[in-house]
Picture 1 (spheres, rainbow, N blue to C red):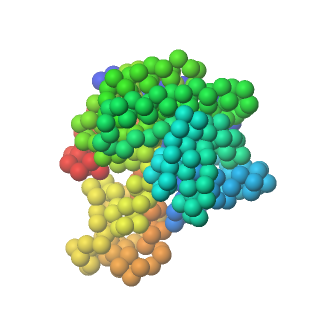
Picture 2 (cartoon, rainbow, N blue to C red):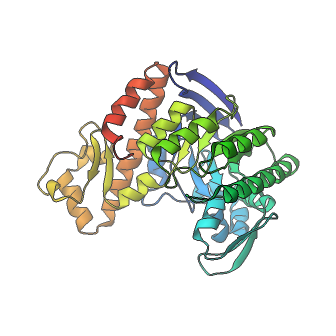
Picture 3 (cartoon, rainbow, N blue to C red):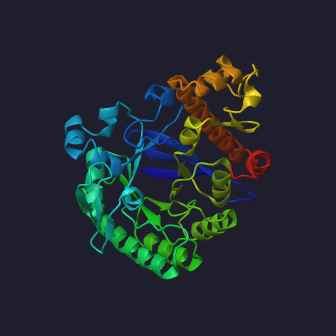
Length: 374
């Protein structure tokens, strides 16, 4: 994997660049649709490709639980299994281990947990998580880290940082010794909750190792927006500018824009697809709740400025009708539109950065999505 910065905005840290993998080039800043179990909910990969998405994200925990590494090995990896041959990033599954399991016991060796499906017991070590991602065949892998909720006491956050650093060192050694490092890159993850000193320490220690990229974990988990912006900025100051920077689990327009202004390159989140299935849609005029009775006789497009199939074909009245009737088509159309919006949103941001107009684009979207965070 190679990364090159193309342009940096003169007034902020916003930047464009390219990540080059063996399966293709990813232009940054980039939003990655989430294919947790090897599928985008309610959409085929044909639509993802036609929209122009260059990379998707899958989840190590869920793919380990089902279908499992034996089947993925027989299939020749996840790319072959789901017939998507563009780059794939896999997160480590650490967040899911801590959030989904009714019993989860972290130790210095790793973390013991119970499957959310059948209650069976499993143990993730930093090395095992990488071996699972080898079976998946992901182009960018993530280290195992210890996630913390918000709020969290500083002592607990410090212990999680210490364990995250220890696991990162073990992961780096395993990757360097047992992987094709050019084909499968490995990113470290900065933890530290909302404590600047912990974030700085974690970032400093991780950057002493030569990871190809760095991620910021443990933000956008309920902390106030001003804290999100502050901790993002503090962390970015201590990450190397020549490496890609990935903000994990962020998908609202304003959170993305705030992070891009600090120099973040990569994003993923289930939010655009999840809220689509709940009837909430992103548009160039702000959020739309398609369930509202205000659209019962509204025969205008969902977004007249949007060129997606849904906006070119259906009215708000029709989209409201099929959603209220529980039609599967409503989930498909809503999901298609929201992901199309995200792709065009990121395209517009990249164009603005290259043209030296990021501040104008930021202000434009802040006027629409700033009050509720997107």
